[in-house]
Image 1 (cartoon, helix red, strand yellow):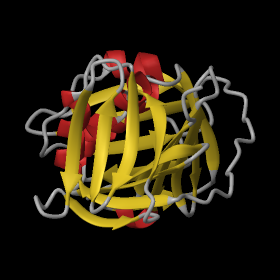
Image 2 (cartoon, one colour):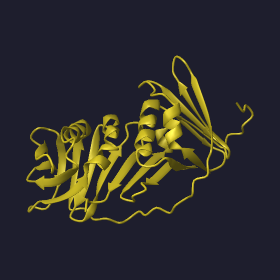
Image 3 (spheres, one colour):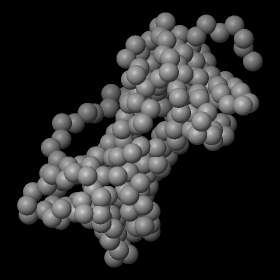
Image 4 (cartoon, helix red, strand yellow):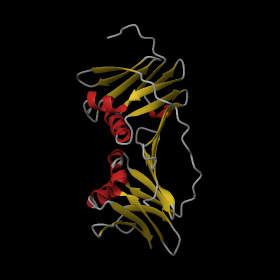
Length: 250
């Protein structure tokens, strides 16, 4: 263990469990990722090898209890190794993250303090696209209801998203099942869609990769339309957000 590291960045995050859920969602898409740590906060963007799903984690400085940057740096993280090494924290645990050019360290603060140090790896910085998209359907839903709907359609392989009247309907194509989020039931808070309705199909497996994030937010925003990616926005309770873009299924 190296004890004389001069840390370039150090932050304290209030929800260690939420942070590790973020890492697991990230690890479901890529094995390695580049953490960009600047005076604006932490940014992680990752595109899966098939180049159909993009995860964008954006934690501004207001998401942290403390955030100190002596020098902005990029840290190459072996996400798969991190997930394997760090056990799931408790909901009340805090997390301290420190990084230098060579090392990064996670400290889980609970009744027992646990410390994990890793060596930064080389991760090629890829210029990932930020497409300007127009969505025909924009919905805001209760996150737990959306998560339940996706879980109920397990095994469907393809999920069709459809705006119908005042409802957001999710249909498991292969199993012929439906789950409906509605304003009347209170699971759907807002819905903007054409009167004629619109729908698009997406890969169930790729949606499932990030659905656990819905357990750490109150509401989510879902956007889609003919021929455009599914856009799911998770506004985190601690501050910041996660955006997930998934290309339509061919």
